[in-house]
Image 1: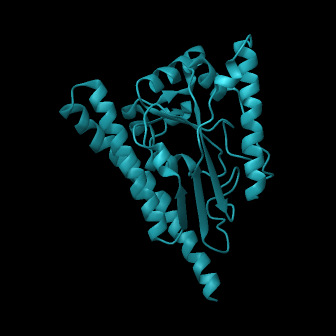
Image 2 (image 1 turned 120 degrees about the vertical axis):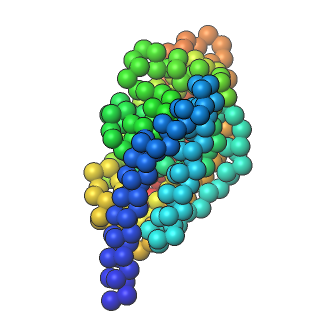
Length: 257
């Protein structure tokens, strides 16, 4: 009976958490960011303030979920993210991976799907923060390189979507393109969620029988120099780096499966 009541509570607590997320997004849009626009005239400072507000808001959201008993988490190697201009690549097992990383990464930037720019709960924050829009087409890679050179930490999920339930990881080449063309090392982050929840196609109310435990581990940088040395073309370097990252994330995912 206690186990069943605990599960019912986590369903309710998860619903409360996402409701709070939606309300918070609306409040940021209609109150916080309009005030920020009036008070901070310099665009660069306004974007920096917006990103810091979002980071702190996400920290509160993660803290709320932990406080309500929805999840627990452990972060290993967080100090490695205390730098600037990082290209952070992570696997993507759950719906809230982005929230977790942006809650703990300072000066975070990310590539945002176009529909989020028009969503009433998210359009305010993503527009105010000036995140990279994935609809920028051919300029997308250049936009990503530019934000890295400006000292921002760019968070990318190279799968492009959440990992399917089968656990098969398939990377797109966009992240490797940024690393090779921008001559930027990759900072890999491994996200593990046990038992699995909030996966691709999974309803939020289908909570596991026990508490969810997130483990986020920041690994050492992967340098790109070895992939671009010699007479290797840019196209081949991108392909080799993508293959290397594919093996890396696949092997690590199998270890934690």
